[in-house]
Amino acid sequence: MGDRMKIKIRYNHSGGISRIENDARIQEVMINENIINPRKETIALGFVNKDSSGIVEFSAAEFEMIAQEIRKRVHLIKGVKIFGGSGAIRLEE
Image (cartoon, rainbow, N blue to C red; front, side, top):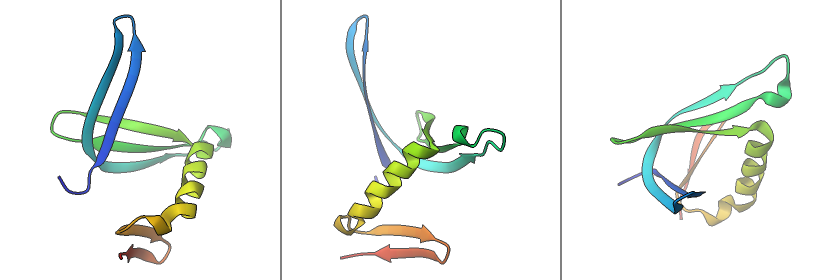
């Protein structure tokens, strides 16, 4: 399976509860800038697999909260690639 993200969705509807699970690779990271209203800027992850595709979109505040939590816990994750201004760094234990 390799480097693929897992997607798990649970939602309520008139017929009960449905669950969807899938895996996909991230194909694109999109940053939607809004010069007139910076609070409406978004970061989106486009994903695709053989049967489906989609977009997960975050507000800038949501993405920053996720990034802060990852920064705090990155030492717990094995085999992480960190991309920054100086390129990719691979951390392995």
